[in-house]
Image 1 (cartoon, helix red, strand yellow):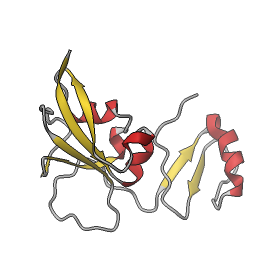
Image 2 (tube, one colour):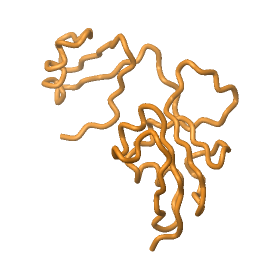
Image 3 (cartoon, helix red, strand yellow):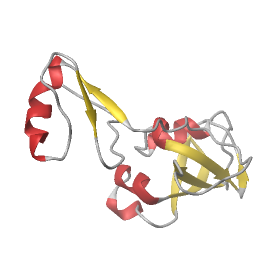
Image 4 (tube, helix red, strand yellow):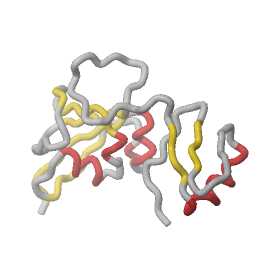
Length: 141
């Protein structure tokens, strides 16, 4: 039972998670019942750990904000080179340097990525250091 519509705009690399017709532009999403902004963002396909700042009608909000009919929502990824001051952020700070762990189940993936510039020692647990900020967000087997 739809309860209204919300306009969304996702920015920069978050566009990779939405369908092509919704990238780099404002689009309308129909609400199916009462929903938090976190649930609405994930319904679009954007994983919430990738989100750092959410503005609703120009005001920063947290994940628990309940979206209302007619809201205009802007969703931003982590900012690494812009000082946002005391703006309310929902994302976690990005660790420096960025690292990730590849366990034994992802060894084949690690071996396939050997052409990339990375330090990948051979062991059951491999810590890789990438020269650019790469992040693994989801894994399905």
